[in-house]
Image (cartoon, rainbow, N blue to C red):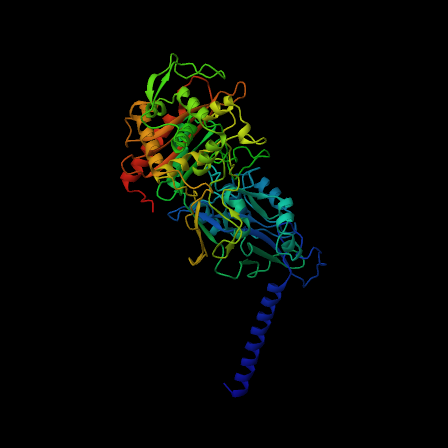
Length: 611
């Protein structure tokens, strides 16, 4: 071949390559049309014979994900689904045989498939009617679809936020479309085009408290290109676009054990807990290992009332006899009683309409026996020896009457995160006395009823479980933690949430007082109101409670809070069963025992060594 011919061939090849590169660049820089069908920028450009269009289908929001303490996913579940893109009626989709196979895979008739494809106005995933959730393809369906040649139909990866068939975890929360919240929180991003009113945002739990951190750098799309007439471009019809940075989406590592969480949810349903909560804390650092709230909810199918999304583990309820621990601590700290003091319980208090739960009374009992038998006469009498301030201050020292969940104040920082930040933002503080007036104005009757955990006293299951941790730490109050750290997608550490102590301006109770309360809780199980817990996997300690709701027909709230095993405590657990029929067995105590058995089995099996 002559040199001249070689030069001519080289020029021709170079020209073809330049044309291809220019065409690819032109396609990539074209404005995209999102799932709504309208081009970016809001104006539709007139279609011409040489003009290209693209339709975009969102595959992944780009939002950061949650993991449990062992790395198991709590959010972010990828699978493959069938995507359908609209084409003009004049365009040929494929052969009749291929369309018939597609119709069979989708479980519909050929005619129904034709109508469905013709009616498409924007790209969409194949989903069950009214579900809004793309259907997961089986391996067999994927193999069949791979052999078909149908225009505007593709198998694409889809990333679901929550797993199918599993109830939501209220502490994690949920996401939903909330244009008002987007306008309030992301006004600047809206102006710059970096946010849209259709974006999902956190609606509760960690999804809400960490929403700004989790948003990420943008979604991933499948872009389907057509020519000016709406016909697909052979070989250039589909591209996938993702954010360029490899650092996102972020991974938020929680303190929750997912297998344990699911097991305790199962147990709560089996026990028939219709409304209430189970909170499990690691006694070493107050980390939240599980937080079950009933009723449950489906995060993939939220109704307008958001039924079941409320986290009962952090709501405040009348605690009943659980609060007797505070009354005893206040009396011991004030020096108005001692462990050796004896009390006589005749069954009736003689004033304020108070009586003991046991008809005829308990007779002569020590302070420890009074706690073990949950004697109202003993603790109403102790409360009357105290001032309102002494009760309130002791409660504060023990982490009651205020929010105890892990938080950052202004000026603090955990890596790039800055306060104020509260992980359990829905947590209610509870109270000892009602708002208004001054503590010194409380009547003697109010004091007596407060001493037995009635009147205006409110506490949450989280606070009750944390009270157990506090007593096991000799009076040191820790902040229950739900999140340990946040990492980039490649594993690099972004921020760590160190364990916090919750200090009271009034200091702590003494270790001796904490020890006296622990001994009393051991007596609750060994010979008191918690005797039914004796034949469990571990030796247990704790305090039962039955509280009047104050609402006709609502029954009582039943409680049990405790820890185990006694000799080397590992877990603190609080169980609340709301609105139980008066006089019914303590459902909370029974469920507490089952939860402790599950924890003992979990430890013994070595299925997961909690760090």
